[in-house]
Length: 103
Length: 103
Image 1: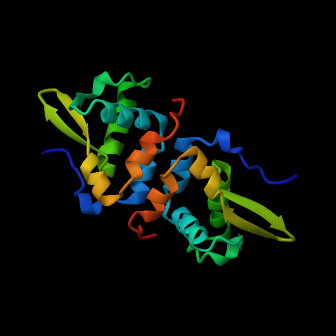
Image 2: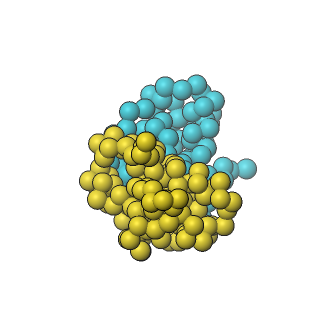
């Protein structure tokens, strides 16, 4: 079984905003926006436990903000930038352009 | 004692996104954006109890999204559109322009 990724047309604004409403999850999204290549979960410098980090990545994936692909024992993350832009034009850029929030 | 309203420079992105991440609160914000005159809490057609509605208005006020002014026994609400635009350019418009989310 692959990981669940909602199709673009099913993305919900409230769920996307909720997923973005956490400083650690914003840090993940900013990192992926600045470094677009798929990136393993352990490389984001999050200041949380591994299980909390896993939770944050899952919230982002289930809201449709990131794609996660498994390769061996690692999960590689990338931003669903085009999907988000199609469904909520300008939203991700507005979030990324906002003042950085202390974590 | 007046109600607390955070100053514009103290608005935090994560708190604003969290406050917007609920369908009833999005409905309040959309209503205020479409009808900018200050509006009493009971006139938004929310499908929640009065205490839940009060909670939603408080979350929006404490995040800096709305201003609430008391007049007699009523609270009048308005959108802090300019403050939000100054702190998070483009964010509110991107949210308002996104597809309407079922409540």
